[in-house]
Every structure is written in C-alpha cells, then in structure tokens.
Image (cartoon, rainbow, N blue to C red; front, side, top):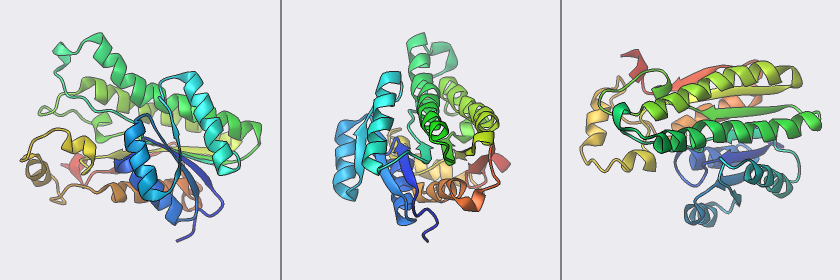
Amino acid sequence: MTQLVGRRALVTGAASGIGLATARLLREQGAAVVLLDRCVESLEEAVAETGFASVTCDVTVPDAVERAVDDAAVKLGGVIDLLVNAAGVYRIAPAIDIVVDEWDAVLDVNLRGSFLVARVAARALIESDRAGSIVNVASTSALRGYAAEPSVHYNASKAGIVSITQQLAIEWGPRGIRVNAVCPGVIDTPMLVAMNDPTCEDYLANGLPLQRLGKPEEVANCIAFLASDLASYVTGTTLVVDGGATAV
C-alpha cells in the first residue's frame, strides 16, 4: 500500500514498541519518517536497524521540542504533516503511595509531552497553510481502572490524552488538521516485558476475548489508518485496540 506517499511523518517514542512499529509501517506506505526518542542508545539501535533519520529529544522540555521538530522538518525536507505521539512511560504504584514527583514525572511525559509536540507541529502547519494529521497514543487505562495494576498517574495521563485529542480536533479542524487517538490494550512491547513476570502473558491473555496479547503492528495499522486520507472525515475520535478487553 502507498496511501501515505508524499507525507512527512514524525513519530515520538519511536525507539521501540508501538512507536517503532508505526514508523516502519508509515515508511512502507510511502511516508518519509523521522524517529524521535529521548533514549539515545535505543534510538541509535533503531536507526541502525531501519536506516531512518532521527532526532533526540525530551518531550517534556518546550525548547527541546521546538528544536527537535524544526530539525525533523529539515531532515524531511518540509513541514511535518503527520505526527504520531507515541512517547510514554508506564508506572505501577498504589495511589496512596505515589509521591508528587512520581505523579509529575508520568504526566509530564505522557500528557505534557504529547501536547507540546502536537502544538509545535500544528503551529508549523497553520503558518504554512497546510493540512495535516495527528494521532495520539492513549491507553485503555484511560477508560477503566485495574485492581491488579494500580496506576492512577498513568490512567490520568492517558485520560488526558483522550480529552486533549477531542479539544485539539475542535480547535484545529477548521485549519485542516485532524486529531485522533488510539487506546491500545495489552500489547506485547518492552513496556510490558518490563514487569518481569514470566506468568504475566498467559494471565493477561486468558482474560481477553481474543485470548492473546496484541502486537505493536496491529496498533500501527490503526494509527496508519487514522493518519491517512482513508480517515479523511474522522477527527476527535478514539479508536480502541484491545482485543475486546473493554467489552468484558
């Protein structure tokens, strides 16, 4: 498929997982792609593997975001018109034990970071009078709680993603910028492996209607759809990609 030919894409959190899978798919569909991540070592590995251009950036720092988006546009040869906000961190802790610094760290990356990158990208599109598409990666944690994995700070950050997606779609729609989100469920990524529980996969899969974990590529397929002209009349929506988990 070549439905993204001519598009210039920036993918955050692109050194691994959903971000990297999405970057690969966007390239396969014809887009020029730049990877963005704050982890230099992981980003270098992704670049060595894929040959993609990249920029290093902490998405919580406004000046760094400005520079990174500008650098990415130079590497792409023009204004970014496809942004995927996949940068995120996941932490588990009972609400009563979370200290303020832990709360701030999660919301800074997941929510503040997504907003900052989206705003800079949108400004460039509006200034150049170009249309574009932004897809934010939220989570089913935005839609429901989990007793087994208490993560109120993560849940709040991802619920915020759903909310800002709707608001940005309203504000930027008249300028030709569509903004949507995906809510992945349990996806087999390094973020999941980080839980270091060898029984985790079977336990989680058994609770899903599809009886298996999702693959990063399956989330990437949905992101690519929302980013493309196939979804030209879709904005302000959130697509759940969870193997049926939220239907249970």
